[in-house]
Every structure is written in structure tokens, then in C-alpha cells.
Figure 1: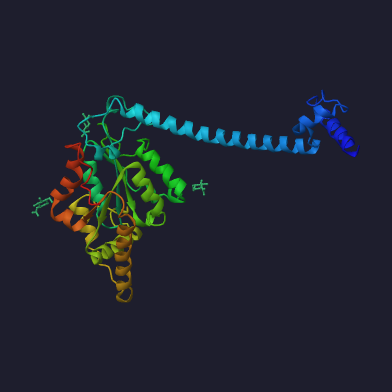
Figure 2 (figure 1 turned 120 degrees about the vertical axis):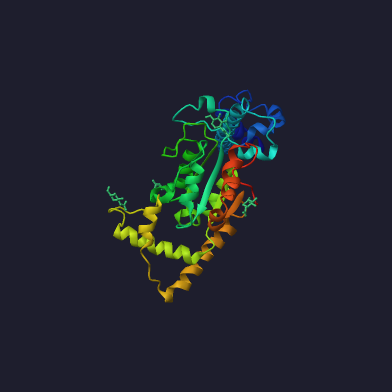
Length: 331
Ligand SMILES: *[C@@H]1O[C@H](CO)[C@@H](O)[C@H](O)[C@H]1NC(C)=O
Ligand SMILES: *[C@@H]1O[C@H](CO)[C@@H](O)[C@H](O)[C@H]1NC(C)=O
Ligand SMILES: *[C@@H]1O[C@H](CO)[C@@H](O)[C@H](O)[C@H]1NC(C)=O
Ligand SMILES: *[C@@H]1O[C@H](CO)[C@@H](O)[C@H](O)[C@H]1NC(C)=O
């Protein structure tokens, strides 16, 4: 009797659910006992339904997010393929494909240059190491565009987001500078000093270089004492402005050079060794930090004594033979 009462209560609760168990009459014990699944308490049902709904909503939101990501990826893949298809040159070896890019600038249409492959490079150097001169050499080629010390502006290197954004703009050929070319750009890059955020964010920058196929050109100076003298002389000129009241970090004539060379800096013997050791360590650390990138190491002294090195390693190999990289890689 007690049993039947409980059954009745359950059936009534089930009926409350919205007609699901409405056909079950409280007196029909046989029918009730054959369908025990329909007779859970209302609270349990609501709980289960709520849980199912929660899980469903969670799965839905997750799949939406993932689909969005998937869609984005598919889209970029498609764009990449579209871009590369009409330009694909079967004679380009597979190993070179990651280093040959076909950028689509936002600010203009590359038109007839669209299928001129572009190599990305970065001259990694230190102040007073001849990078201005080497950059001038590179820019003397009609298809090479080296855009100077872009990261001398602090905001552009204040965090890795800013650095990445700046590099993206440069390598997308949306960066305007006097280095812009009338001919089709076949190599684009910049001059980047080790103390311009390069060492601070080296992990992310190495990742960027490898992801986007950027070749690094280290330009270092063997004679660190001469470099130090040049730093002192440059600091002096920046204060004295010896060339008709203007400061020139790089001279452009023998005459200008002779005037600046008249200044003989005094070196503080106490700090000299520390100073030289510091810059030696900086260069060594940079080589270690960037060892996993595609890179080449040039020394200013070698480039000066044998210009064929600069020409061969950098200019000719980029443009006269498009299958070679901007520089020979010494990974
Ligand atoms: C990064 O630096 C830029 C420029 O200084 C600034 O506008 C931006 O808010 C910074 N972003 C982060 C995540 O710190
Ligand atoms: C340099 O640009 C010219 C035309 O602007 C183009 O025909 C030539 O292929 C380019 N050179 C290289 C090596 O891409
Ligand atoms: C300074 O200006 C004068 C006149 O314009 C010029 O003759 C002279 O060569 C300049 N000197 C330097 C160091 O540039
Ligand atoms: C200059 O460098 C090139 C390329 O590395 C080399 O072939 C040539 O022999 C060098 N010339 C001299 C004079 O050292």
C-alpha cells in the first residue's frame, strides 16, 4: 500500500513534467512498473536537463571558436596558395621556397612585379661598425631596398607586439622610406642594432625570422678599439657639429672625413677594458641567440679589404641569381 502511494507521487511528478507521463494513470500499477525510467523526481530531471544544456552550450561555443580559428587558417592558407600558384617557378629548389615571398602590399598593387619573388633580410649590427656603408652598398642595387634603422624609434620596439607589427609592415612592402625602388623589389630589409630591442626580445624575434623566412646578416667589427674610438668621435661631433653646424654620423666625402678625423679623442684607461669586454660579449651573445636562424656573419674589416665579399655575399647572390639567397647561409 505504501509502495503504491509512492508510485502515485512519482507518477504525478512525472505528469507535471509536461505531459511526458500523462498517460500513466496512478491506478495502473502494471503500466507504471514496466516504465520505471519515467518516474525519477522532477528535480533530478531538471538537473539532468540543465547539465545537458550546459554541456551543449559549452561544446557549441568551443566548436564556434575552433571553427573561427579553422576558418581563419583556411583563409590564410587559401590566400597563400592563390598568391603562390601563378608565380610558382618549378626551377626554384624546394629548400628556397620558404625564403622567397610574394607579398601583397595594402597600400599599392605590385602589378607587373607580383611574381618577382622577394627575400627578407635584416642587417644585425652595432653602432659604428660600418652598417651604414654596407646598407648604401646594398641600396645601390636597383632591386634591393634596405630601410635603415627603423627601430631607432622607441615606440616601434616598446614591446614584441609593436616590433612584429613594424616588421610585418616592412616585409609586406608597406614601409615607405627613401630606399623605395622604382624597379621590382627582390630583397627588402632593415638595419637593426643589437641594442634596439633585438637582444631583449631575441626569442620572439628568432621565432619571427624562422616563421617568415627572414635571413639575418650579422655585421660586426673585429677591431673593437677602433669602434670605441669611432663612438667617442661620433659623440664629440654630435655635440660640436663640426661640419657647418650639422652633425654627421656618416660622412659622404673625403673632405668631410678629413675634418672629422682631426678630432683625437682621449680614452679613459680605467674604463677601456670593461668597455671593450662589454661590446665583445654583446656580439658573442647575439651570435648565440640567433644561431638557429638562417644567417651569415660578415666582418666590417673583411668587407672593406675585399669588397667582393660584400658584393658576392649580399648583392649579386640575391639578384643576379634569384635561386641563391640574399647571403650564403652558414647555419
Ligand atoms: C606596445 O607598444 C605600443 C607602442 O608603444 C603600445 O601602443 C601598446 O599598447 C603596447 N602593447 C602592449 C600589449 O603593451
Ligand atoms: C629587378 O627589377 C626588374 C624590373 O623592375 C625586373 O625585371 C627584374 O627581374 C628584377 N630583378 C630581380 C633579380 O628580381
Ligand atoms: C660649409 O659650407 C661652405 C659653403 O656652403 C662649403 O664651401 C664648405 O665646403 C662647407 N664645409 C663643410 C665642412 O661641409
Ligand atoms: C675576396 O673575396 C672573394 C670571395 O670570398 C674571394 O674569392 C677572393 O679571393 C677574395 N680576394 C682577395 C684579394 O682576398
